[in-house]
Structure formats: C-alpha cells, structure tokens
Image 1 (tube, rainbow, N blue to C red):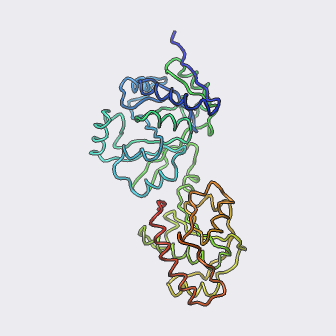
Image 2 (image 1 turned 30 degrees about the horizontal axis):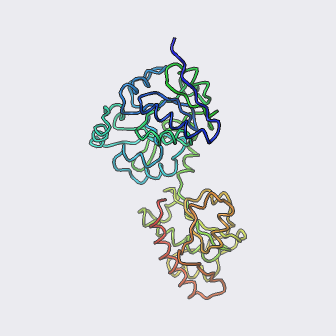
Image 3 (image 1 turned 90 degrees about the vertical axis):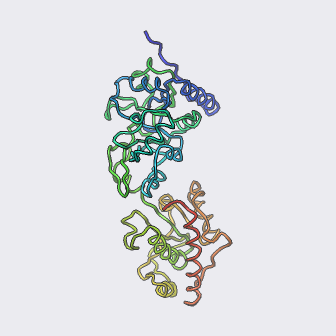
Length: 376
C-alpha cells in the first residue's frame, strides 16, 4: 500500500521559512507538493521535469492531454511566457494579480516555439490553440514557495469538478494523500471556490469561467481611477481633474467623453469638503478659457471607499497627503503630492488671472506625474 505523504502545517511565522525551503526543495528534486492558495488546494510540479509533469497529470482524476496552468510568484514572471502584451492585458495583470483569477493569453507561434525551446518543454504542454493560462495566487505561502523554487511551476487544483472543489487540506489528503510527496497545510482557504478564468483579447476579454469573482466584480476591478485631492474640492482639485481628463484621453487615444467607456475615471475630492458645493466662479472661468467645463462640478468629501478605488492619488499639499494616508494607511504607496517640490497654494479669494496661472501650472505637473505612473 502506498505511503501517505508527509503533511507540514503552517503553525507560526517562525516555522514558515523552513517549511517553504522544504517544499521548494521537494519541487526542484522532481516531487509533487500540495500547496494552499486563496481559492482551493492544488498539486504543484516543476514544469520542465517530464516525470513530474506526467505524475501531475496522472493524479486522480487523470487529466486529458491539455496544457497545465502556470503559477507565478509575481506578475513580472508572466513575460517569460508571453509575447507582446497589449494595454488591456497589462492592465488586467496589474489590477487582478495577485488574486483568484487565471488569465488566458494568445501567444504568437514564434514566441511559443521560443519559450518551449528555452524551457525544454513540448509546446503542447504549455499552449493550446495558441493560448497559455497563467495565474498569480494571492496566498503568502504559495507565493513564497513559488519564489523559492526559482523554476516555472504548474499546478492543478484538487477536487473532481467546479462543484467539488477542495478548500480544506483534508480534501486534498483524501484525494491525493498517497500520490504526492509533500502536503502543506495552511488551514481552510480564504474563498473556498475555484478561480475565475478570463480570456484576454486585444481590446476585450471573455469570461470563460465564473469562480471567486463574477463579471460585475471583474468590471469594477478593471476600472482605472485617478484621484486629485485638495481641501474644499472647489478650486484646485476640480481644475486638476478636468485637465487630467483631457490629458489622459489624448494619451489613450479616445474622446474625453468616452473615457468612462474605456474604464477610466478621473475624479476629485476634498479633505474638508461639504457635498454639493459648485466650483468657484473664478475656477469655472479659468477652466472655460482653457476649453474645459466646470459648470456642473459639485464638491464631495474624501472617503475610505474612494481611496480604495483609486489607483493613484495626487494631493495639492502635504497636509492632504497625510489626511488620505490617515484614513487608509495601506494606500501610502499610491499617494503622492502633485508637485514634488512643494505645496500648491489655495487660490481662494484670488482673481481669474490667478486661477488661470494655477491651471497652467497644474497642467505641466499633471503631464509629468502621469508619465511616471503605470496605471494607464
């Protein structure tokens, strides 16, 4: 009777490095390791080890001869398997990874040959009808192991079908306990259902399988939001947002009115704003002189939800930056002052000429800042 695989339990952080090293070594030596992800448990093998791949395919229930799913430690690893990735594909990787989403990319035939040759793997082990499926899991143990291995890793999930997934290590033990070499137990998975699968096209995508995320959630997550913040949201930040919309529209090659259809929002808010206040008359006039319309703008206060939605937050002053980070400390990495040299003074009480000079200054700062960030 086959011997059951050893189960390593993630009990505390001090033990984790040794566990990760053990799992990585087992994989490098050609073994099969059951790993936790945020969705379900799955069995992993190093891609360019033929015997390990065969064992992975032969785990019950046996897979048909179709490509395995490549699992990545980080999104940067995708480039090794893909050719040129368009703006949509780049945005999907940036917005959805790491996370419970597998992305299916079309790869040019010449690139398929190059990758297969470099990895010493038959092309049909990776690509099906010119497509490859990649996933970057959002589980600390899985990502640490994938990073530690240092070689391309493929996985297949435990369970027999979508309705029969394996959110507990006991499920994987029951299914594969004597057919794998090591099992890592990190407790029940976060989502307890399979990943969502999306087929990525040049300018659109197709929902191939609903999993953790449905279409509505995916559409919301794929939006790009740029947020400008000042105090009252009646002068500086509305002007900045109006200017940025025009700059962004030109950059992505669409009419300004169609930015929302492209999934791009440019918005503004104030740290001390009262909802529903119009822009100052001077701001409206200065904007009009530059071909922009602020007549319908109404102020709104900054909120936790708005900060979470934003991909980049630009503040008019350091006090606004502190206020945003104070509300959402985890947002610190995406919040920065619009002017890196100093605060942009509030023009309230000034004349239209002052506002016009402000708008011209904002335009240059926005062009520079948008060139620095990778959210479009």
